[in-house]
Image (tube, rainbow, N blue to C red; front, side, top):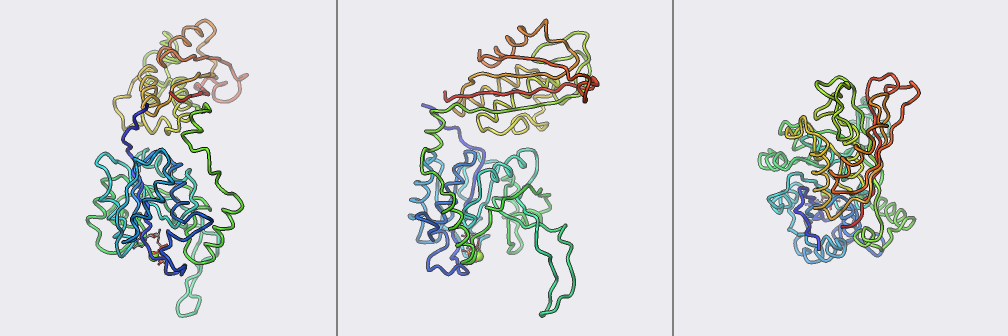
Length: 401
Ligand code: CTP
Ligand code: MG
């Protein structure tokens, strides 16, 4: 049996609103889209996003219903679910959700249940932006309508829409920053990014998704119903069953330019007399491409998520440090490596004489999983052809441990 690691990400799903504008006779989260409610649809997609603690903020008196919906949507992730009671405003509801986060949570996402069809990829995007060092990240969509300033029925000016974006959820923040922004909030804000911005932190925008629209008025519910009827989510298999039977594949690439100090390190080998590559670590593009491919295959983010420049311990580190840590991350998440294939594009070094040594070194760092290395030049074309640097492309297969 695999022990689920304590997640670093917490998702607060606010579902405590009354849905006055929808006017469906029930709190909006409990209105049906098809045979399932708005909340159930929102949670299905939350549980398809990277593993996280999920705190559902329910209307007072509907906590039990919210928990039933959550357990049905969570499948094997039911241990990650809790329900708290919401407040009179969205801001009060988010504050209640924040109070329900576990101590280990480092990144918090706040998501409107009313954006019931938001696909999991939007969650991944905001998480990786915060993982890469931003205080906060929000999904946005370009505004397509021409915008006018209107006062008392009169058009008093145009607004340049190229500067405008519509904000969606989930919005992700570093937990300490969001918590202190909530503690110090001076008034009511329409979203969490506004609160964090008021506290003086920069928030970045990542691409949103048309399906992340908010169900607000009856026409929005009609749209959600039509979309779900056209593309129902398959009821089975669950993610876990799927993972158990099928291997997963991931792809990774990396590029480093020549110009580092000392000897060249590539494919886990030291190449005395060859020009070194530049980079935060040793610039081993082969090892880094393999790390990305493995993390992608396991759905664990990418190299920046785990080894970014905010991890000084990896400055100058070699392939074995990166690969064995990656192997550890996969193991914690219940994966083992099937095999890895990596191709190097470079004029130098010449791999022919050391291919077997490179394969054995990389394979050893991955606990013995087969690694194959191929190398090619690019006929004098591009930066590799001009001898400016090295590119590497890796494909990895992982299977359930
Ligand atoms: N929300 C909440 N607590 C509140 C108000 C809103 O948790 N006191 C949540 C809603 O459940 C929704 C999200 O915040 O998922 C966005 O709010 P909105 O679309 O305005 O939902 P409602 O407030 O329910 O709708 P209305 O404003 O029409 O009453
Ligand atoms: Mg509201």
